Image (cartoon, rainbow, N blue to C red; front, side, top):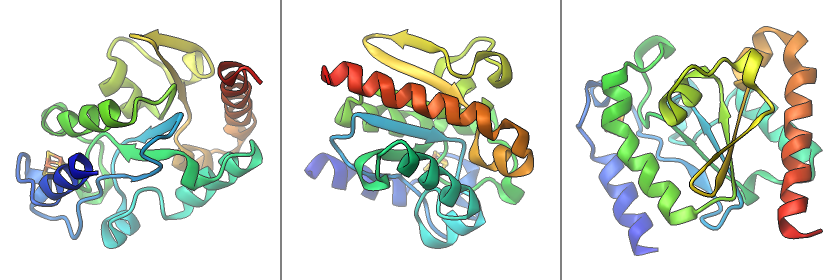
Length: 186
Ligand code: SF4
């Protein structure tokens, strides 16, 4: 647990990029430190910035519902973002901001060692996997990197804006559920 405490302390005091200037709270992430499933979003929004917790607004509620529907509670997974501080006006983090912050996410990954990582939205996909990833085209497919399975899917806030994609996201979540069962040998 010492590693986690040191990491959180570092993030809360971090000034590596300009996003520290307007934050109320840094949002390191939360959840099960032994999670089999990790979910990664883009960055904190206004409510996350206020509370210091990831995915607590309307998009967080939707994410929690999807998890619940596949039989997984939020406390069982680990949820984090590419950047730990809110980009002003919820804009997309710049490559420089993401690069500055990604070492924290890598340390979280090393501590958790999840079996599956779901990347929520294009920004999470781009900064985690690189290359030409398009959510509409590539969602639901498995990408294996060094023994970890990645899946890109829609960001919950995109689903709130365009409900027509909810069915596709649901298919992705059920695919994750089935893969977790398979990996557990159930
Ligand atoms: S976004 Fe990341 S790198 Fe930038 S100040 Fe916050 S914790 Fe530090």
